[in-house]
Image (cartoon, rainbow, N blue to C red; front, side, top):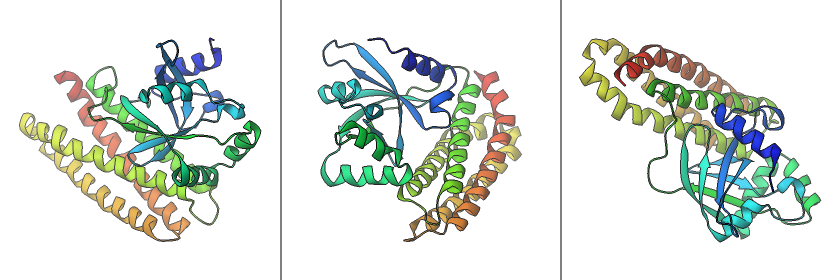
Length: 277
């Protein structure tokens, strides 16, 4: 059956690189496309997700409904799915978690948002937790010019930094397990992005535009400075009971450095990338 609410969210998500308003405003949101168990047709659903390192987690709450949602029934039949994160589109393998792993990750989600307990109680069922892990192969990059694609990736980091700052502000005296994972996943994502730039974009820049050596040197230096700060942030998170104020300070410093770096990079590289294309 058509779902007008979902259709509207999907259209807004795709039109605005993952940004939506209304019910999902400010949430971590993805689009999950499964293959219909009966029809074989693609079935796309907007879902909130939880970062979990190299994978993401979704919970089959169905808003507290007593039956499992259709997307869960579909992926039980065919676990190969498509994920849109607002920037990239990639194929993933879905795994419905069981036993102690499911319980641990559901408890972690509840620490971050007690609403999951309410959904579970209302539904009268144990809410399934599903891990989505990207299969080998490059994702589909954002559409548009190379410069616009770079800005889209940067905007995703800006949004995630803003979410984490808000989560730290809203947290109690202790840093919850999910907030730790969110921070560590961000650290890994920034490190990977910078490594790809070092090996690709900056290496190309050194050969093709030697006149921009000062720009490249500044960007290299900023990458090294952020790598040191990421290590410091990870050290804080590695302690048994991270200090929230230390975490807040490090995230604030990281945010300032990242935003200044992204703005400088866009100022100098977006026109170059678009002109080259």
